[in-house]
Image (cartoon, rainbow, N blue to C red; front, side, top):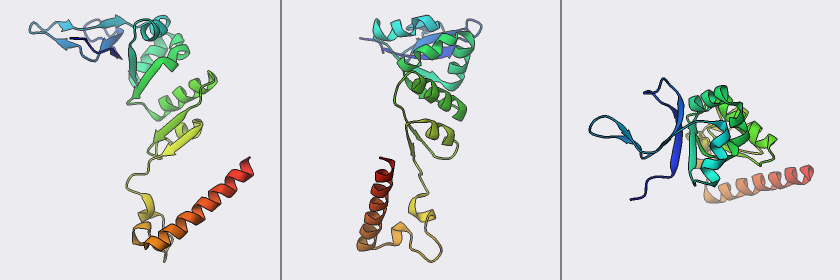
Length: 172
């Protein structure tokens, strides 16, 4: 039975809040002791965890901030982290900025509200406007996209596509 090769960075509640990489399959046994992989955090070992030992790394915003406070070398290895979860808008923007400084191309998906800074920081920013769409974008007297006929929708989409092409030509 092979254990998970995914580690998440978190504070160890049993060890005075020290940061550690913990296996996502870690659990407490019947006596309450933790079982599974647990590796003390060091910014110097992140690359080794990924390249030599084959782990995939996950961090949350609070754990990332604690890691940076403890060891600035975390930023040098941010490229090895696969999953960034529960991040504040500033944390997202910081990760994107560091990845860009290291020469990586970035894409950010966000809700378009509190993620605006990170969306703008990314090479490609994709705002996922769930619940908004055409229902909230029609001008007074115009139809919303859900009220358009197929022919009207096609004509509008062609017009938008043409405008996008013209904009792209101006950029190039």
